[in-house]
Image (cartoon, rainbow over all chains, first blue to last red; front, side):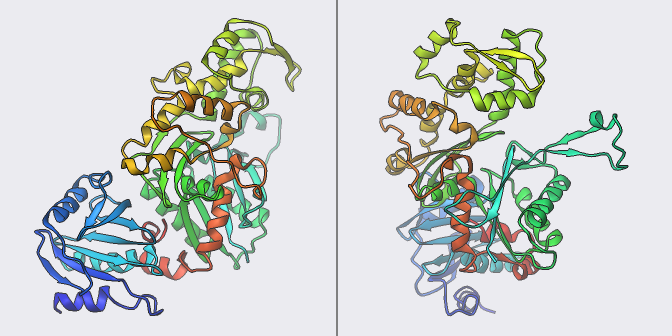
Length: 133
Length: 362
């Protein structure tokens, strides 16, 4: 299964059978190289990726400045140290799950809820971790 | 059936169906007594009663006792039937460890077999009760004081602080002070607790407190339930003053207003104004006479450029909102979360296990 299929079928999938989707998703390696992304995903800049990796190691690093993705600023909310970073922007937000070798990104807008985005991103992340990725 | 909202505090457990503009239908003490199993009610049984506190400093510690308490609350108090359990919303104190949250979800789904679960932090709920989604909550409870800045419904954990002092420490302080000025009187802690609730108050400012402390007038005589008479004078003000000068309790910490102002510093400065100008006081101890006025006065004197300002609760809310604002906020949230199916359902729990609470509950 190619990485693009993971993004298209498992991240940008229909949520709960209600016709809703994440607005953007991507799987990015720890070195910043994009393994696959949806067409709507913004391009990540190097300092942004470095900031995200640092925040996984030292939770609270991004909180004062905010989480930036492709220039868009998200307010950091409660995540799980070294596992999940969650950000919020208005009624939408982002969930980033760290796996052994990659970072799984999911961006959502209203009416998708934070809980739904978390489920989609973290489920795929857990699957990749089980596969050793 | 209405969803049930439960706010388990260190002293009082508030529970009731989710009707936001009323007080919770059950406000009962969390503390329980363990009665000896053999049921023999001889004269010895009174000294063998062990007092059990399932909730300590805000967190659930004794799970068996909590289970019994919840059993009583849900089936006896709120009229649930076994086999027909509904949906429940719990409030969590600040920085609840993940394991505690998971254990609660597990208890609810496996022992009580509920159909839906949601948990939310007390700070966010107290803000919802006064109609805001951003601001600072200062929750002065029985077991702890939590100061939490919240922005758009999300608690800023790096900025929030918890002080391990609360109503229970103020009661001990009052007991100490009273035994100093009333030597030879036997005081039991639950009597002192009632005295604290009835008599304690805050002086207008530090200068007024110093004056009261040094004078000896204004002493009232009070009769305890067991017939002893005690005098209460300046001790009533000492209890209130301890919140603004923690050195009275022996702690090297700033007063509560200063703590609030310092807690917002890690948050990005564009939000400081919004946070400090929307401060909510909640918790039983915050309803002490004179506390709010003293808080506002200290706010005017504090070291930050932005003065904290207290929010007034909306008029349609019941009186004494400070005692159960987290519960009311929970009732408001329950009306949104459960109908929109954003909660953890039995099917979700069965599929993913207790860790689902971290993903679905914000």
